[in-house]
Length: 229
Image 1 (tube, rainbow, N blue to C red):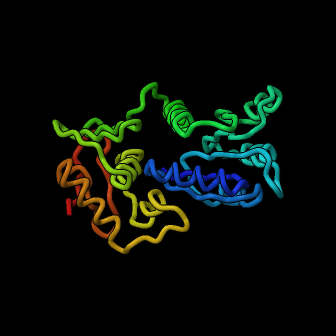
Image 2: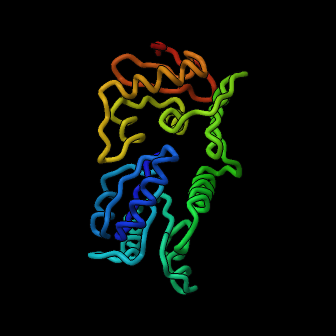
Image 3: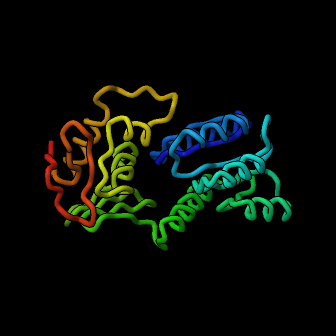
């Protein structure tokens, strides 16, 4: 899961970045409103965490511009402002939730999961394709009769694929989903992660489409033309 964090406080930003990465999330952190709006215009994010008191462009203005151009990326406001007027204004402008600082990381993670569940039209923290089920709370993956709790990177890989069953994701697309801007990525990192996921859940859980990338089948169906590798 790739997250855009727009937060100007270096201590808060660093703490959130580390906490989210510890949960297998890829984090791009920008420190002012203009950079945040530009990142949203060019990046593909699962959710945005937006502070309101930003330099160059206030958070409310970032939110207004983003929604004005039709960007429906889920957005969670994180701010020290605890007045009702700010909450009402943010939600009316199109924010999906509002969390007042200081907060516990566990609550932030729960709210992220809740926002993503609502976006996906689900009331539970699981996603799947009929053959594979992934629990977003516990990181437990189930394929057939096999269940295992995946470490962060393997979870992130399977999460990226299961979000788009039936769609091929290239190496570059998977790297963007799993790693942040400033993380060094080994050339075979994706291959290694896929190897471990297959070893735990079965060799057909992730399919390779030669010359294109990897995928999981849609609705638990077989994938003609794909070759497990």
